[in-house]
Structures are given as structure tokens and as C-alpha cells.
Amino acid sequence: MNTTQYDMIAIGAGSGGLSAVERASEYGMKCLLIEAKTVGGTCVNVGCVPKKIMWFAANTASHIKNAKGFGFDVEQNDFSWKELKRKRDIYIKGITDWYDGYLQKLGIDYVNGFAKLIDKNTVSVGDKKYTTKHIVLATGGEPFVPSIRGAEYGITSDDFFELDIMPSKVAVIGGGYIGVELSGVLNSLGSRVEIFVRSERLLRGFDSIIQDTIEKDYSEHGIEIHNNTKIKSISEDLTVNTDSGVFSNFDKIIWAVGRKPLTQHLGLESAGVNTDGKGFINTDKFQTTNIDNIFALGDVTGRAALTPVAIAAGRRLSDRLYNGMTDRHLSYNNIPSVIFSHPPIGTIGFTEKEANEKFENIKIYKSEFIPMADALLEFKTTTAIKLICEGENEIIVGCHIIGHGADEMLQGFAVAINMGATKKQFDDTIAIHPTSAEEVVTLR
View (cartoon, rainbow, N blue to C red):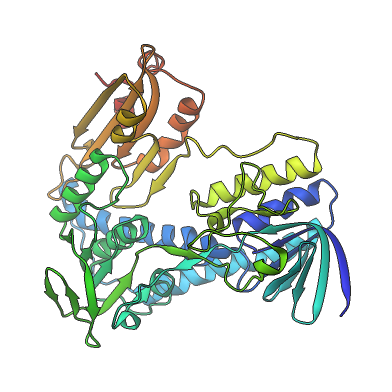
């Protein structure tokens, strides 16, 4: 075998792996990026980017439907899912094609193939070996499908983006990020949607104000929610058999019950890298595994499976390794996140339940209202906002928003909350009127 020497090899060309080698190359390091599928990873190909395009399309359908409320005589004469998919796929290909020239410009070598660890300093792809000082494991994850009878008759969130025809009736199994987002898109575009959730609420682990509002709005807009429902089996005719009844006449069944790490074929045992019981790779705060020159970041670690988290972790890792920033690492506290539901959700920090368990003195401020954008509409949504404050100075330790614009407004508030903002500092900020965001700085 021929062998090539590098400073850093990243396995996985998603957000985490790309960011690590990009930053390392800026410091003059010789880097290799290896990807078994398509550059860009989940986010670009079957995640954030195509999902957001579908979300925008769904919003457009809602605007057409709601135009009558503002006096417009507008009808949706036709909608071509196939044309939307065609244009979306062209857009995604443009991004992945762009990476070829970008990586070349940075001097980063790229190999498309399955990588396997030979030892702590050696990686193989086919019959080629590569040696390196540092290895970054950023292989991401894939949709989890439970081992129940008939599970193969359902599709995953990855498969959703391959659909050429919009299904007329869909069963979405799972009430987390992915299930809630896909349900909102499909419902807005015209599919009949039923969500099956094993837990008591949609979005388990989120603040109660988010759970209450999303369930109310989704139900009012025609999405049928089956909480506390365990799937027993799926029939070939796409009948869903549960412990609370039998549900049928679906065109598609979508599994959205979580994701699992892509670690099983990496040869981790050859390098002595440890994983937990679910296959996720354990790391310390510096993204270091139990092997001192092997690092893991992104979804493969099982922590905060969000694209910006993987990017931040990758950049900070290279800052530390190659630019003398000895304590440079990502803090996993106060990570803002958004769910592109209908309407969207933005959240950061502790839920009310978590805050009560951690702190002795908390105070809650909240507001619920019909946003002005929906005031004249037949089909309205709810905007709900909650601030969670701790201690005598009322430091803001949690912010939860659902409603039009929540996805955009949270970013600025996240900066303030990460800086330790207090309720008084929010109160002292002049409101921008009329907006939904002004409610965050005028809560009483």
C-alpha cells in the first residue's frame, strides 16, 4: 500500500469535518477530508438546507391560503411537488459542486470512499493508507428505524427528500424535531397528517409553553396527534397497528424516532476508541476521545446534534491544536436552537422544569397572544413567549418563543443571554413597535 502523511485527517465531510480541516488549513496544516457519501453531510443533502426550502414552500402555501383575510382574491390553482423537488435538488447540487473548487483552493485533499482506522495514526480507504498526527471523527448519523414487524414499509426522513409525489395522507411516527417539522410542511402543502408519539407530549424535553402551543396550533390546523401511543407493527398496506387502535389509508409512513451514529464500520476497535452503549463516541470538553490524538465532534458524539454546534466544535479544535489556544473549546451550555415548525420555535437555556430543579429562586415571565400577522385571518396561530429568570438579579437562564419570526428573533436574544443579561437589562431596552419581538423586552 502507498502511504501519504498529513497533519489532520477528518473522516466525514459534513459540517464538523469540513470546519475542522478548513480552520486547520488556514494555519498551514496539510489536511485530508474523507467522505463515504456526498460532501456537505446530512445538513446540506438531507437535512437543514432542503428542509428549509420545503419550509419556505409550505409558508408560501399558507400565505396564498391566508391572502383572502387581507382582501386578496387569490386561489392556489396548482402546486407541483415534482417541480419544487427538481429546483431544490438543483440548488443542493450547486452547493456540493462548489465544494470541489473550494477545497482545492484551500489545499485540502479530498477522497470519496469508506474510511477505516488501522491504528491511532493510520486510516485506510480501499487499498490506500494515510497517516496523520491527528484524526477527527465526524461521520454523523443516520435515521433510526425500530425493530418491529413491518418497519420496512415506512420511509425515513432521508427518504422524504426522494419523494417525487406529495402523499395525500401521511403517518409521521415520532414527535421530536424531525417529526414536528415534516408534519408542518406536509400539512401546509396539503397532505393530511397524523402524528404518533410514544410520550405524553410533542417535543418531549421542551418547555411546557412550547408543547402546549404547538399541539394546540397543529390540532387546529388539521394535524391529528396521537400521544401516548406505541407502534406495534406496520402492515404491507400501510396500516399502523398501535396499542391504542388501528389506523389505515396512509400513502406514506415516515419514521422520525431519532438518529443513530455512523460508527459501526469505522474500525474504532483497531485504534482503541471507546463508544457508549448506543455507539456514540465519548469525548472530553476538548472533543478528545480516550485516545489522545483522536477527536470526535458533531452528531457522532450524541451531544446537541445541530449543524452550528459541529461547526463551532471543529473550528475550536483546530484553533487549539494549531494556533496555541490551549483552552479553546466549545461550551455546550446555552446553545440556541430553532425548530422550523408552523409557526417556528426558538429556544435557549433551561426549561421551567429544569430551572426549578437546579435553582432555588426563579421567576417566570410569559405572554401569549394572536400575532398581528394573523389578526385578520380565519386560520390563526398563537405566539407564546416565556422568560425564566434566576436569583435576586433575575439573570435570564431560559428563553422560549413560538410564533412568526421566532427563528430570526432568537439569535439576537441568544447573544444577550450568553452574556449574562438580566431581566432589568431587557426591560431597559427600548421596544421595537409593532413587533412580536417587543414582547420579550416588555414582559411583566
